[in-house]
Length: 72
Image (cartoon, rainbow, N blue to C red; front, side):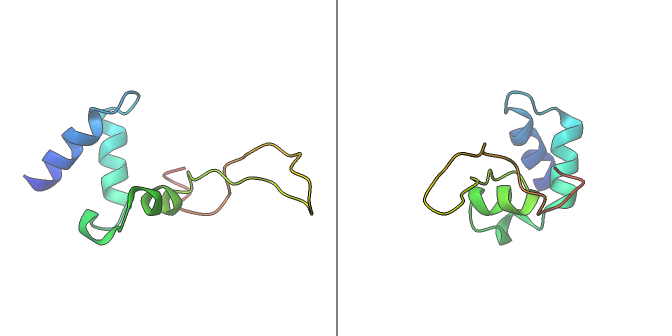
């Protein structure tokens, strides 16, 4: 029942259906062990990373290749 409630809560996000919500819950560690939403995004590999080279910032912000590939 707790996982079903979490799945329903995730499914309220625009663009997230029941299948995506189920996959996220299956691949993430238990929700109680994830300290923040930013930590969950980093675990999934969805936290954007800014490209920097020295003092200039000229590259595009991209998603890193780190994190869980099935969730990315």
